[in-house]
Length: 187
Image (cartoon, rainbow, N blue to C red; front, side, top):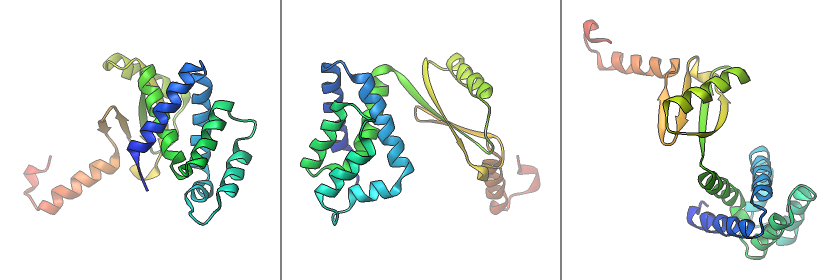
């Protein structure tokens, strides 16, 4: 059950608390760790969202996964979520926190999808090209590999999409053939 309003409020509260305690950077690292755990383990997320699993077991699971790896502020926040029966919103709250942190720091997420992995040198050149061509200054590049795009790349940032993949070209070509237009009108 998605609830972005609730997630945003809890994330804002955690940001305010961490700023007040001067621990924003450490809590941000904790949130990155929790986001990685949630993405890597579907079972962990299912456990959090399960109404059958008791609060004690959920608390124990969260403690086992995070013990020694997160700050006291984040640990206390997680226990608050459990006490309030909001633990199933943890993945959403983590994402909302990271989005709000990026907004505060002026960091823009850029997602680059390619058919094959790219080198760090190419990633750096893409980031520098984006900085030169746009008004974005702080960029966090996420590189994703999807073989189904066949070739080219897909670039997503700030509600913009640049799709120069072979998959899209083939889709466009198929749509033109489906219209059954004359050969001279194709491209």
